[in-house]
Amino acid sequence: MKNLLCIVSLLALATLCHAQAAGTVTLTATPTSGNGTISVVVNWSSSPPASSCALTGGSITNPTATPSGSATDTITKTTIYGVACNWTRASNILHWIAPATNTDGSPLTDLSGFTIWWGPVGNPVSTSTPVSASATSATITPPAPGTYAYNIVACNAAKLCSTPSASVTGPPIGTTTATATATTTVTPIPSPPTSLTVQ
Image (cartoon, rainbow, N blue to C red; front, side):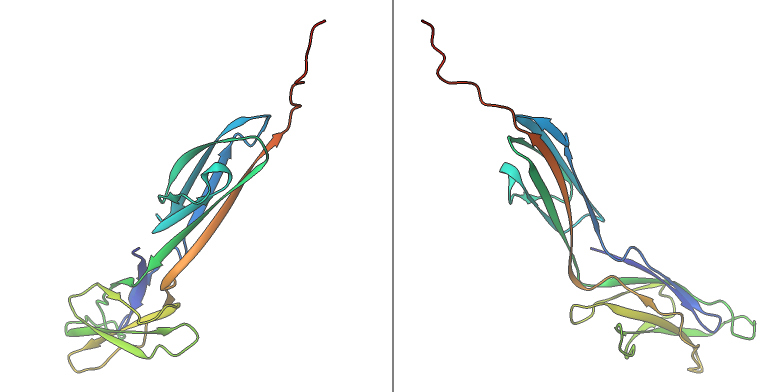
């Protein structure tokens, strides 16, 4: 799954943005109630589309579900349906706007490149990734699952660099899960008598 982060730059500063931090999943079961034996349509969706989902409940327990879809079930008792969706992320994609001026307002004519600094949230952003002056995006692939923070600096030909941009936090690297449930309530009706005779 790809993510967009949006940063702010330096020597006047670059700008990082971020997309939603985690996926969401919705689940509905229609109708929500009925009498006796009823047919239920279960609909689910994930946003952004999940890597995988699993649906449970009634006679549709444990099928592999697509990121969104529909299933039909026939039930005779109150049933709780559930869906669990997983998102697997290996990297965060950063986008920025290069600065056009120096901090004194003069035109920036000798931009030589950028350095993205990053590290686990709660620790110093101690890992650096150099990026060319013509770049406006970069993909960072951390070595381990976790949540990472990023900032960026711009440097000129004299190797003078701006102060860091505002730090942004990316969606977690690794696998995240979201769940949802929906219930259809069935009111039982009496079984018919079984020993009807005529004399």
